[in-house]
Length: 160
Image 1 (tube, helix red, strand yellow):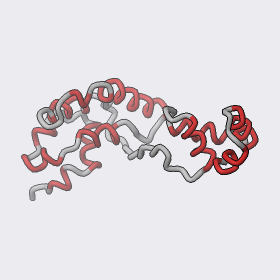
Image 2 (image 1 turned 90 degrees about the horizontal axis):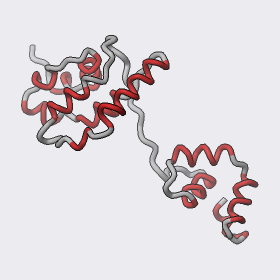
Image 3 (image 1 turned 135 degrees about the vertical axis):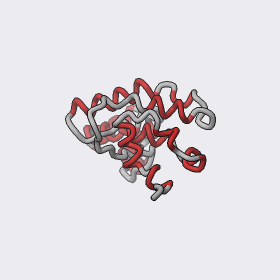
Image 4 (image 1 turned 120 degrees about the vertical axis):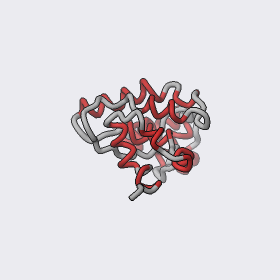
C-alpha cells in the first residue's frame, strides 16, 4: 500500500525524518509532494522540542545558526532539496523528538491598554518586551511616564 501525500508530509513524519537525519527524504517525495513540501514549516517546528533544557537549547541554537540566518537566500522554488539537506543538519542525532508549534506573537494583538500604550510609545520594540514592560510597571508608573512624555491628563486617561 502506497503512502498518501498527507502521510509523508505530515508534521510528525517530517520531524521524524529530520530527527533521524534522513538525507534522502526529499528525493523520496513525488512531484506533487515536492510542490507541497514547506521549508518554512521545517524551521518553525524544527526549532522547538520537548525535553531537557540542554536539548531544547541545542535545537534552537542549531536552527538559528544553520537555518535562520540565510535560509531564504536560497530560492525556495528551485532549491527545496538543498533546504531539506540543511534542515536535516540541525538534529543532534538522538532519535525522534516531539516538536511543537510555537505561534508568533502578533504585534498589537492585545486588548491590554498598558500594552497598547507601550506599543505606541515604542513601535520598534518586540511585543514580548512590551508585554514584560506592561507587567513590571504599575499603572501609576505608566501614568508618570506618559506625563514625562508631555501627554495631557485626558490623553493619559484614554490611553491607560
